[in-house]
Image (cartoon, rainbow, N blue to C red; front, side, top):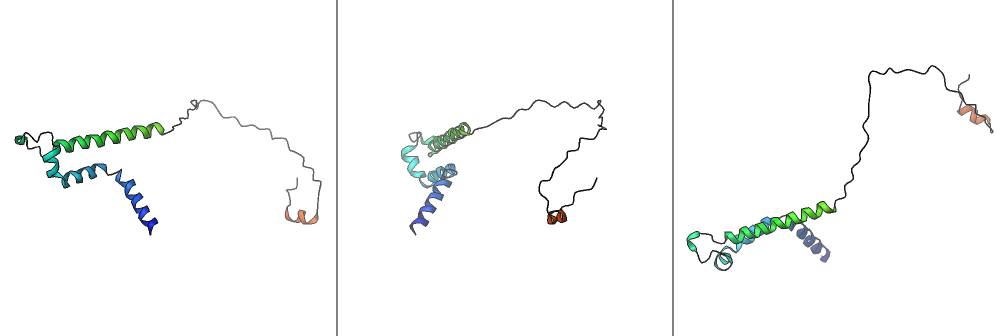
Length: 126
């Protein structure tokens, strides 16, 4: 039972890093009145109707910068190899000449012979 809860906790913690913006937004919506009263930069100026959105925008920018830094780290850790090959020149003007000579035939000397081998494998007779 403990392992199941631990696995669920680890899965949630891994997916939470992907949804940081949504978590910040949900936290803002849940604590909107507290943020507007205590954390808002413009709380002394009620005519601006900020209601904590300045705090929310700062948090979103911080999350975006964190994602950019993480992406840069991922790019630095990625090992890329580039393969280069010299260009291939193909000329259609050259004619293909076929060799008329036959390759030399190689004589094969068999050291061991048996009747059952000859019954299975019969090389072509010249």
